[in-house]
Image (cartoon, rainbow over all chains, first blue to last red):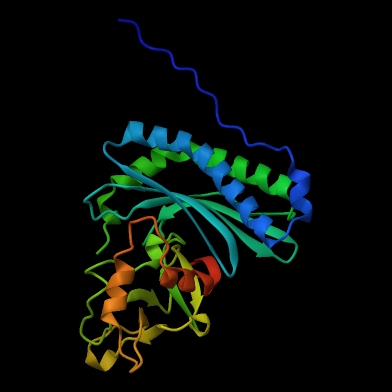
Length: 161
Length: 121
């Protein structure tokens, strides 16, 4: 029996019609952050597949939050069902800065906050195109951390009470 | 005053755990745990307790009764100022559902120091 060859391509964010977002109101901004979230999650699908190859029967959930002092936290949570190990969260946070938007990307424990991997914090102009490109680039970099996530998910020292 | 919820900005981390957080202990009220400090190198979320909207309140442990110094329980309170267990349990039951409960959103809106690290305070 011959091995199947699967050709796959990373998802690509759409950079068309971005001009309309430069002059948008609050409602449109909500839509914009929803688009950013979708773009990040598309990229993280590859990371999920990689982690699933390394760790059996994991649970993966995607989500997003926002608050008074951050525009968006887009995340994917990896956990072992019926386990007391702290879930591992892969996430990108967008917070307002004095000039632009600060973007932080890391992988860390959901409740413990132990850092599994962390990328340098970046501040970019509050421009849809730059934010989309930055989000996409950071999500792609996070996708290189499948082994670190798998190791953290098996680490008995990461148990939570 | 700023208190810290250790860990991430996920909905679940800002929602009490059923059973574990819905029962108190000696000198400790039931509720979502927050701390006055962050362990070195760990990530946490700084919440301005002055920005919490009712019915949520941050209640410090009573150390004379066995509570931990610097620990707070964030919980809904009733008109008498006591923890409203029914509302707390209803809130906790949304954990893991993918839903963001209105109390979770109140907490997220009160985050004034997102992604702060231990030793930075």
